Amino acid sequence: MWSGVPVPESGVSRYRGTFRDSRTGPGAEQVCTGTIDMTDNRPGQRFSVTWNVTGGKACPVIGQTVTLNLVAALPRPDGRGDFTPVSVDQWNGGTQSSTWRGWRVVSADGFLNCRATPNGSIRRTYNAGDPITAFRDRSGLAMTTSNGAPWLRTADNCLVRANARFVQPTNSF
Image (cartoon, rainbow, N blue to C red; front, side, top):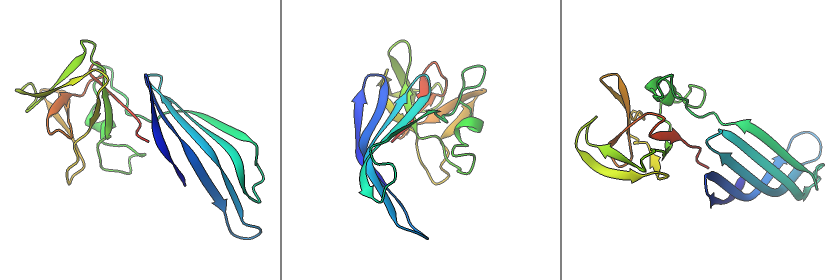
């Protein structure tokens, strides 16, 4: 169990808070508590978690700090830079039927149009750096393909081109 609030930083998604971990069963109960710091350092897709154990009941590691550096399991684009339904709709080890939810606009010209239909009329415009949430319906799938190009339906019920030139997936804490 952990709690806390996101800490915004330029180019980095960060969460800081507290944790409580326990072990029960045969032998003495153990409870460890402390602080936790999680950092998603895009675009390198590096993800780190640091636990600083500060207290607890019969906790054998009080005073220790543990850090794990991982590669984030984000959807990856294909050779053309497209995020396809095959990679985006199969998250969590392929056990979920849902589209990856968190995205960020990375368009080089500073904005990204969100359209009513693929290449259709503009419904709204996102700015570079804006977060985008994928649309969620009963199927959980928010990807469509038009003329071989994948499009992502957003929570604003409009479509953006699902290509690494325009959007990148993000981790949400």
